[in-house]
Amino acid sequence: MNAIKLSAVLTAALLTGALSATAFAADNLTTTDASITFKKAINMENADGAGGVLGTITFTVSDGQQEDMPDEPEVGAVLGKTDQLVSPTATATFARDAAGNLPKESDVTVNFDMSKFTAPGIYYYRLSETDPEISGLTPAPVYLLKARVVNADESNPDGAHFKIDYAVLAPLAGGDKVDFIENAYTTYGLTVTKKLAGDFADYGDSFDFKLTFHDPDTDRHMASVTVRTGAAGTELTGDGTVLNFTEGQASITESIKANEMIEVTGLPEGTTYTIEEQGAAADKYTTAWTTPDGDVLDTKKLENQTMDDADTAITVTNTRDSVAPTGLLLDAAPYGAMLALAAGSGAVFFRKRRRHS
Image (cartoon, rainbow, N blue to C red):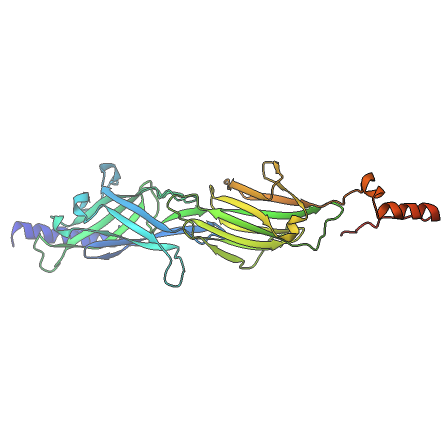
């Protein structure tokens, strides 16, 4: 047996015997002879009502650094090089399937050029996420990727052909091994509450509101939000209406009465929106919007508003008052004749006042 083959056999034996039960005891990644696959996940715990994100997230594998090595490195520990990869980048893709469903996780595969390896070992690489620039999404930290390379034919190693048999992933800053990299997605809620005022307000009137939303990102990552209606000041439950985004925009029209509200959840910071009051009922009233900063805007359309990093509450008040008769109208027929008749007969007329609840 030549020296190269002996060295390969000894190293392989050391790697297999000494490391398989320690360095790769748990959370080892999915591997083939020349690839490593991990999961990219979106944590939706703080994104009530959101349907997830659309688009791609890119990872870059770079050379391992000496400071990445533990104080007592494993037998066969080696700093990995990017020229051992088919490509230094790998991508997670979030897209709707044929049924329209959007998964919360995606496979990410790093492919290796095994011809570039010259010896078995534990190869250290850095894995970093390119900031996806998705509003509401927290970028992931840098990770340490370790791949165990062994002889392709362990029973007859030739020192020239190798394969990957285990790999692990862990935060570079320290922490447990994982088989996924997770980003937290954070969104907020918008409520529009209807109020009525004035002597002639009819509490049976129903008011239509068209809400239009625009994705804050250039690449249009928002998938969907959830819309519910119900009594103002209560916690709305139920599935609601899932409003999907198309080309970065979504619109919906909802009808509510006095002391009811429209609730939209799943809006990341920076989402812009316009709310327009429509319909025959609204035409009988004046409209005033009270925004979260205390501004009162007298208009039928509340345009180009932007979500902050907090829930947003807007009140829209419709006012309808009676019109006080003028002296000019009272002197004109038929009012003038009626008043003259009343004066002659001693009758007294009262204006009936419309009641409201």
